[in-house]
Amino acid sequence: MDPLGPASLTWRLMADARTALCGGRALLMQVAHPAVGAAVADHSTFRHDPWPRLWGTVNSALRLTYGGPRAHTESTRLRTLHRDIRGVDAAGTRYHALDPDAYFWVHATLLDSALAAWRHFAVPLTEAEEAQVYREWRHLGRILGIPDHAMPRDHEGFRAHVEEKTATLTPNKSTEDVLHSLTGAVPPPAEWFPEPLWRRLSTRLGAHLTRLTLGTLPPPLRARLAVEWSTEDSLRFARQSDRIRRTMSALPTWARQYPAATSAYAGGTQNRR
Image 1 (tube, one colour):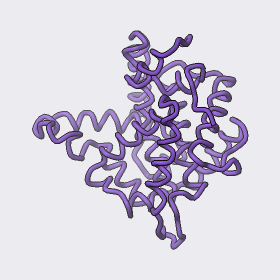
Image 2 (cartoon, one colour; image 1 turned 45 degrees about the vertical axis):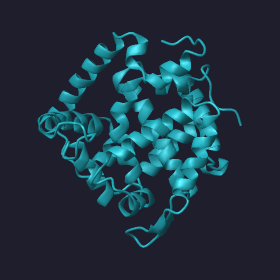
Image 3 (cartoon, helix red, strand yellow; image 1 turned 45 degrees about the horizontal axis):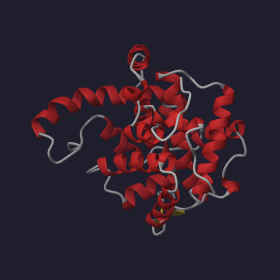
């Protein structure tokens, strides 16, 4: 099964660093799934040190997208990592991290959140482009070992699946931990980062990150998580989104994309907007 290449729209979608602005959104939607939330609560150190999971998720997605043959190696690594993650969730239901429903949900939220980032902070993809990106993302799902029956056949089915699944998401210990981490009340991102400087930066950065996360979150889920979101918050989010869109769009392509994508594109050419 061939990995994706520079002709894919997924390469262009995931290259833009603005997708990271919806990283908190993706993580919150992931852990609101009962099985995923329970697995993170039981088997992760996220609450005390969220950075390894954050960097791990970003690097894994970049390897799967731009790694060429390494995408298969990354798939094997992920399945091995999750093979023994199992337990019982808060409702008493047994879970396994490689259950196709839960495994696909993590994969699905990464795409749904990347599309949300482009809608809010960049140039939204057309319906035809979103359909093509989903076909490519479904191909990546196969590389990850997700069975076809667990993935909607087309983009319309994918959108319906995300909407239906979002309606079943619930608050739990892991969603509380993610919301807490978004405020910046976490350790510095690296041991060498000065603690006093981090304390000064984290509160302001946390306020921006929280607003970006809650502003892009599906409103029904935002209400179910019982987070505060006012009309003033909506206005601030709209202004912030507009500033990001105008500022980032004015930059040259290389300055607004991940170095891994720039390196991958150096091996070929692709017309990108």
